[in-house]
Image 1: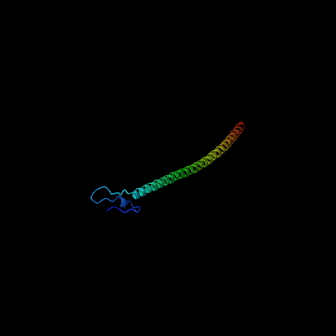
Image 2: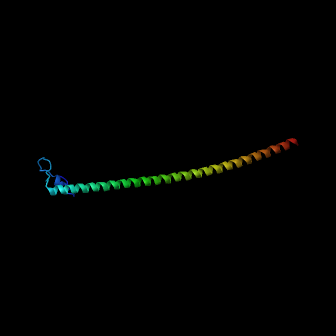
Image 3: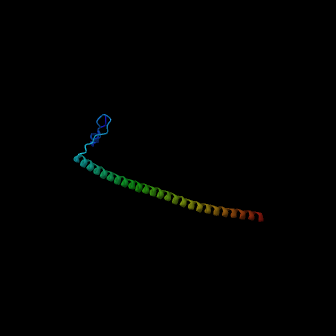
Length: 116
């Protein structure tokens, strides 16, 4: 038994029950109603296609926005790392200078000790 459809297609597609093709009445009223239904379905298809295209565009915009946010987050993180590296270079330079100064002081003290 065929499933019943809300749009009435099951009535138009029902066969004679003996394996023959579905029987369509081809009266002018039926042809007009079929043409109207085809035009309605074509319009609906166009509407749904336009809606799908709009939604696909919206998804692309959202993904692009998300990617920009990710890019901005990575750029900010890279900037923080670069600032930290510069800070560490400065600390290394200060410690190196301090170590050289202490080394020079040590050499002077040893020289003074040897000369006495």
